[in-house]
Image 1 (tube, rainbow, N blue to C red):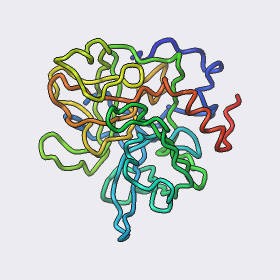
Image 2: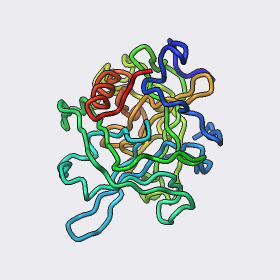
Image 3: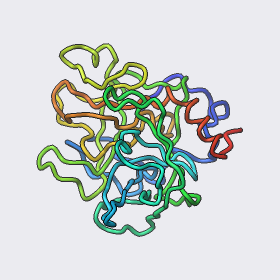
Image 4: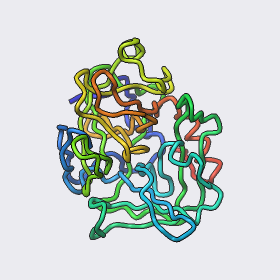
Length: 283
């Protein structure tokens, strides 16, 4: 299925960060349905990571999801760090190759964090600029279950009505409990005009900076605990992190689609942060 439009050839875009391989899992993800969703096929969303934080008493908490964009950086949402110390990175961990929330998975990797970069213009009230990067302390080792996702540029935009996948360990609509395994749901992109209508209005929807995806009837959505996870869309057999699960007060309600940070809008910001932190983006 074609999800994104206006993609330049791979050699021209370099998939933004020039990784030799991105967005090509060894196992293809299931296409349908987090809330109203299904357990994902293990290893089919190998860029998905779990972000955890230790409190002052040494208790570990699952905070957010994120996605691997290259061997040193994780893409996630700025609101995951709201009210938390981002300078003391010793309290943060990134876990990849994770399928079960409560059990250690064979081949999973845990990294300490060297640096957290939150967008300087992030606004927790409006949800604007809800994007952040984490630099891990050591290079990520790619395996069949741990790989990078591709990132779109400003020429690579999601198309209204196209279907993309969002995955996470967030709560279920039925019980309010977190999933024990990584679950996924397929949602269609909603036009900005529709999402901005009073009957659909989401308080934290900011046109251009974010976009909406979901069903008019509700029932299938990302939810609490899925924050920071990528909304991935397929183009020519490769998966791109087109959105990031952003702030939301409700989930899976009729005419209340999920709000996603529009990653393509921030391609220059991401590039500049990588260069500043010693990661070459030359092709």
